Length: 463
Image (tube, rainbow, N blue to C red; front, side, top):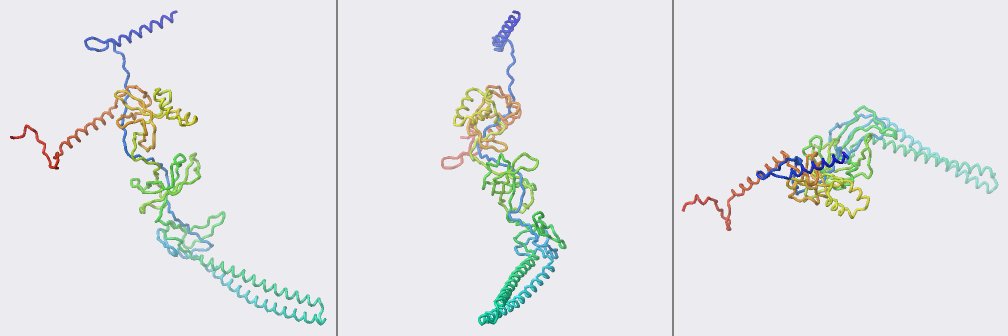
């Protein structure tokens, strides 16, 4: 019973305080009892801007030549001559280095002697074969008169077959020796290494006197030098898996070299890898993307690090606001009219998409007088500073952009006030209008025929 009386008393006191708060003095029209008013949130604001906006995808990359050749040796030998140095420009066919060919020349001479020997042996084997043919023919004649036995005839047939086989063997040996000699002559030509392309010697990894070896399955072999064609450059970059669906062949890009971040180099997307890779020690999947450098800027050199910006979307006449103005609110935090409009826009989506969209809703708060009003918005492309709004905002609206603690507390009808910084900006903008008007007034008027009309005060005119 005591608790009931306590609640009744508290209710009467609260009602009395409210009634006193509504009563005003007749002379001053002020409330008899001062009740604490709602504290306004301090906010910063901005106005929508109409113009061009571009969505950029950024990624790190490395500069390299489109055509780059590692020059290696195809034989094992020692470098005896190298007339070029790192940084030299060479043309296709210029001498790069010469290898020791003394062993190969000796093997060539031995191979030529072997061929001559086999040719003589073939002549001898052919003579023996011809003699065996004659002896067998004579045995056939004797056999017709029973002057020889069948055994002797078969022996002469065997001798004839053996002589023929010797001729074929010597001929096969000659073919084999000729093939060996051809390979030796080819290796002899490989002792002189010439440039396969026009370019600059970007890297020299061997020097005169070193022995170079050929590559095998488990050994890459000796790379003597690297030649790069600097007339065509490209950037090999790694695009994040979140951004790669927007990157397409032929898109415009800009390259910012670490050596000079203020002067971008134009580029174009050449190719996007169809399979991603995961760098060791990282959980992010990236896709290798090649960009063609559309400039002959001498600052660009192979091996440089660069940052790449790829234009994946562009709107030339878009209404944009600062990105920090767009906030996400749960359904329970929004008024009924905004929720009804949101549900109407989601009718074409399936249930799963609708459930995903309904978790958090994108809205913008605008300043109407001294209160905030929520607006449902559809966003388009965005860059690092601004975001496109396809609906929900008009050019004359005042959009609340911060600070974050105020944005987090904003609700429809919440009392707001401009921050000191926002007030100064508004005063500065307002000061520009009279100045511009005075500048326009200072311009002389023109009559219908184009003649200038000077402005003077009527009181200063003389009759």
